[in-house]
Length: 302
Image (cartoon, rainbow, N blue to C red; front, side):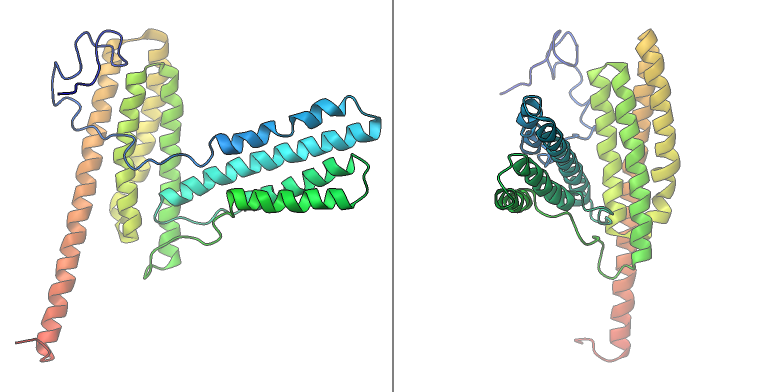
């Protein structure tokens, strides 16, 4: 049977092969890669940052007018690349949620127009009239739009739920995601890969609650303390632990922090399960009430 590699020099740093010790020690931890998909802001968009580099090089071999135009084109294209990448990251966050507000600023669309503007200025620097720069601008705008698409233009919610409720959920989830990102940034200072994976496992558990609340915004009231107070406390504890552990490498502090993450993960899992059971109870009540009404109206099959 295949066995995962482990040992002294493995990321876990244990002196025995994976699976040789406690076979159930990590079974309760969530896989942080569950539900993950390839990032949209990958190598393709990163090429946009390298494409304008020849303009910056050629600018210093040109006259003063061409120098200014080529540097301006370079700056516009870099700004377009940055907007495009930020737009893709915002779209990723939008896709990953069931309830989300559309991006307030259409970064990818503006990136398309800025790409066309940058190519227009670059073509105009060649002093070939207006036709060539216009062609460059139109082609650049269209190709960029076809390659990366538009930004999400409509908010994503649930049918039958008013916009006020979906906005409340979106704001609460945004705040909770900020706490999780702060935890990820802080734990990097501890320089411990095992702890980073442990934090990612807890974050996967927390996001299960996010998705549950997004499925039914009425659950927000029951989960608000978890999305706010408890995650804020987890963030603060992670920041203080990372600063302390990076200086002392205190094994006892690491053990206490891992125990805290286990307690948090268990409580988040239990609360999510309770919310789902309460939703099932509400569904059963609705079904029973409707069946009783049908029987009173004489519409029962009997």
